Image (cartoon, rainbow, N blue to C red; front, side):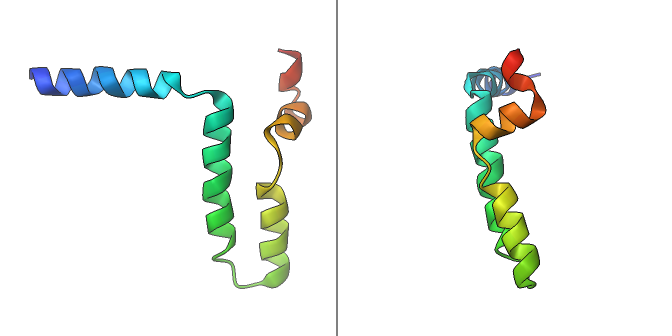
Length: 68
């Protein structure tokens, strides 16, 4: 493995671990919102957007992760 690849892997590892779970959750929800907007059916799009708009706090509460 050359030095450039090793350096790239180290930087990638550091950047991934520096993201908080809330930041990752927000990025996932933003992606989901964009995907929702592609739906043709109005009711399906509204349901999808309601799911995508769930706050991180509500997500943690609903999954039982707040007790950790």
